[in-house]
Image (cartoon, rainbow, N blue to C red; front, top):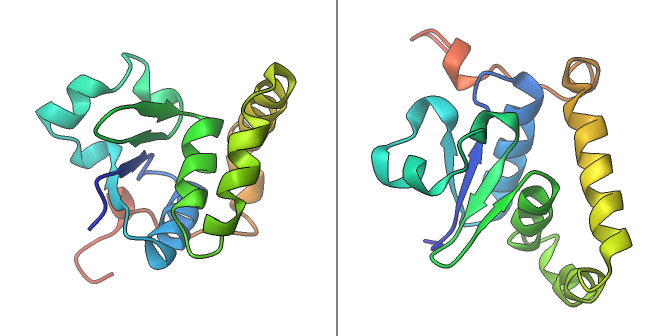
Length: 127
């Protein structure tokens, strides 16, 4: 089991698709906003519902950095860790990463038409 937790909007089909993708390919703990407990919630920013977060023992990564970091925990993304580490040295990279994250996040309903799963917060007991 990983020492890191991905926190995501579990009322969003697109977000759920990504959370499941990462869950199937890593040992990260996956926790939806509706499942947050006091300890984890205390570590998140006040506006935590504005984006996803990856929480480790030492750090909290938010928005684009959270997904980028979560992907490096997957079997697909592990080989990219040195590249990600290198790119993080550049402010321009951070701006591009966060702009890309925000563009996708702000258009989740459109992306959800292509990649979506029934979110846990919307499932009934028969799902």
